[in-house]
Length: 71
Image 1 (cartoon, rainbow, N blue to C red):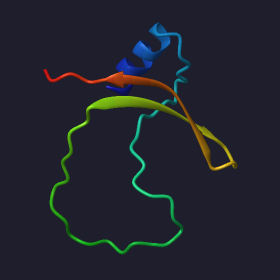
Image 2: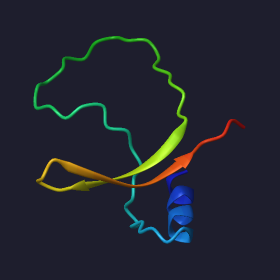
Image 3: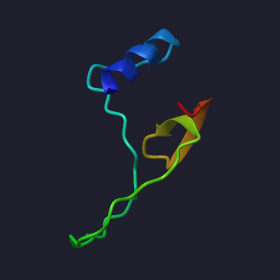
Image 4: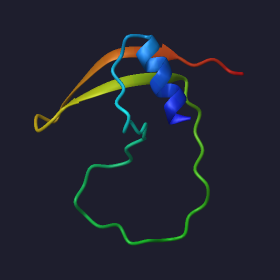
């Protein structure tokens, strides 16, 4: 699936390296959270947002948004 997303990004003129891995960041913290059982997590995504993280600056640029439609 990430390969298909990378192909579509290239088609739209965006850069996508071979090692591109789309992901969802849950937290930035150095605290260790012990493993614990939990139930499934679900959410509804209404848009796809491209986020460019400016390394070391803790600043983010949001160059593009794409609404998602129900299938």
